Length: 437
Figure 1: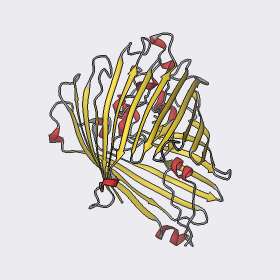
Figure 2: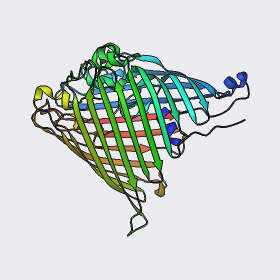
Figure 3: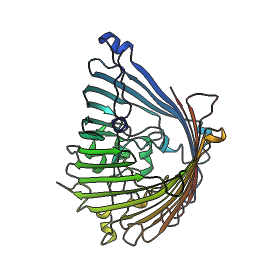
Figure 4: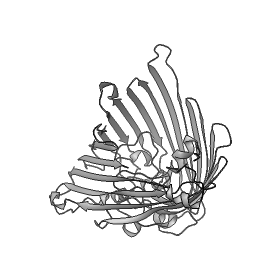
């Protein structure tokens, strides 16, 4: 029984790939792999602009089957579901927190993955419904179900240390987190996220990329990219052509090195840039012409990692033109170094953002625990669409993998924004349990 090795970069870009080779068509299915995840998610937010707490609990996850590889060909499919539960925990008229279920507050299920994959040499072709993990179009798996896509991709790794990607994305199925943005086309959320989509109409179903983002049917999003990794240096360049909306260019580079004064200290640095320009019919974005730039500097000292990041978004000439100077990312791509757990104001026109974060892994103390704390600030200018405010968001993220239950992961998260919009504050806690099989 053969096994086929693929580059780590290709695996990261395309999600999981079954690499077991079958001897015939019958064994292609009999030697296939079943996997999945059971997820329980509880969220509790106390928002000073709401009459009571926003509380919700959901149970769901996904079940996936991938055939073995037969002469380079394999198939995969995955079913996703989310279901609200424990409604008695709700203590106000808000109903279940909709970021865990559908926009209407109901349970829903979706055939989220259904793809054909073919591998020859160092080239992989993957077509159909699938997960994507790219800077400006990705899963954004922050609640119960991730974003999913219908896409046609070719990935090649013939060039040493380099992965080349070309493809076309035709449809988008927003995950449950999209409900946080209340629906509407680009800019319809008042500009405070620079992330949008027609949640109320399309959430939970595959729909045209343009219909989701701007309420206009388009020819989807074409993409070309190159990713390079050589030792401690990594770089990537992506060009997304969102037909009749915008051309979106993303690039980043990072480097780590050994400290001359101590072998245990490993500094690192990174930089990123996003450039967007309206193209074609310019649906939903007007004369979009924006630039986002971010940098990050930090160090790893044994089990401790800490960094500081800074970003700046291009300024708008007036509040009415804030979307045209913002970074618009309606398909789940949120790659910024300075983003908070919930606050994503770094993409709003004229915003300067700073983030300080530190993580510690307690494995050397005999505990499968890692903890992260952060503090982010977002300085918005008068033309941001929200006015000149300073939003702050501290938070934490604790992960625990109990040794007594293999494949179980427990996670406790908290975020505490102030002036998310002018005068709006909240405290939010999340508890997530994931069992992978």
